[in-house]
Length: 460
Image (cartoon, rainbow, N blue to C red; front, side, top):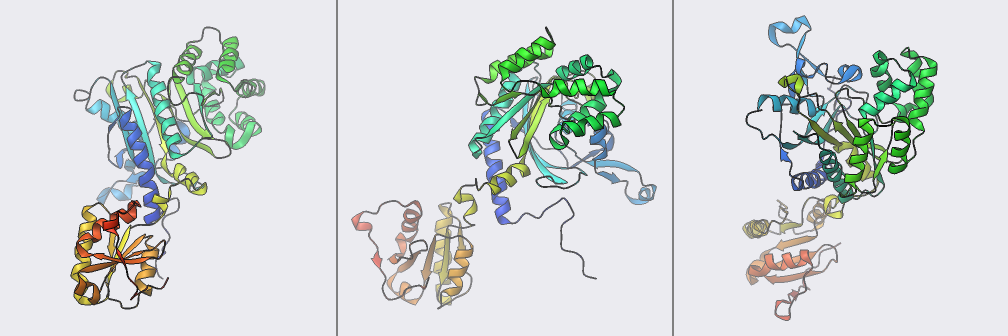
């Protein structure tokens, strides 16, 4: 039996257009992250299993891809390594490992794949990239404001105009559960259920509350709190203050809301008491960027205790993770990528009619590449142009350069504008400059006018 050709479920092959889209988004993300003062970091694809287990809560532990021991230990069925589940826990390990080499206020970004043994769905994969930024060393709400500003600037630059940033606080969540009557020992179960509110609705969460042993009256009251807040931040803060007067979590949210008005996230914030963010390591503000009808594009929050699990002392930290695949799927469906990204792989195709012209073709290609043009050489001599034309079209080329016996004899090159179908000849030593002007659509002066070639016309 022939082996199957499909990639493993929940993973994908990336063809050229896929990679161009990904590199475009990553370029925007990296540019914004660096302008906000974040520095790059990379970590290994797998970690010691003890590094990951116990950091993501009940649901997260089930989704970790474990790696069996190798060699003679394989038969034991035991795992000692695991593929990284996210980029935050590896970051915490790095900060603990290199504490004496990193600055007290450390800002890093990381763009790498992660793996989760999740059920694949639209926009959800088992292998996917995350684009993280994290700031460590300060409890100031300025950190949250900067994070939200960077994320909002990225989404706006990519072309999103209809996103909002949902904002909540873990301690506010805990306080609301307490006054609803949910026992402290059941708070973790309640948050796991609440995190599914967008997917299964209030009725589904109520059923899950019941299945997890949460008293019906407490569950009903909790859901009332989590779905009753006003949409506007100031009104929501007033509502929360009425329930939790003097609560430090509400005060922290108020400070973040005020500071965000001085960043690109101004006008985007929506306080949402139902936002839970399932990962158990969050300790303060939690946030999520979302588009109506699409769902989350990324999320994050403050996690002041996580690094202490490795270091033995707490280090305040806050971060956000954008889902690269999610962004690309939505942008592709909405046709948000510019033509330069989706228009093909090269600017120019150079072709030749006889083997004696191969050197001329390669020479012009070299000149054009030195100008940072994307150039391909059609490798076979052809007096009929259907093959090189089809090839140039498949590569998305805008210009074709042609060499043959006549061009060599006159010291010229024939240049074909593949968009207007106009073909002209220029002196060979001016060919690269003429093509550059053609690609840039710069106006020509009179002494730069090429001679129109009437002897040979390429078929469209």
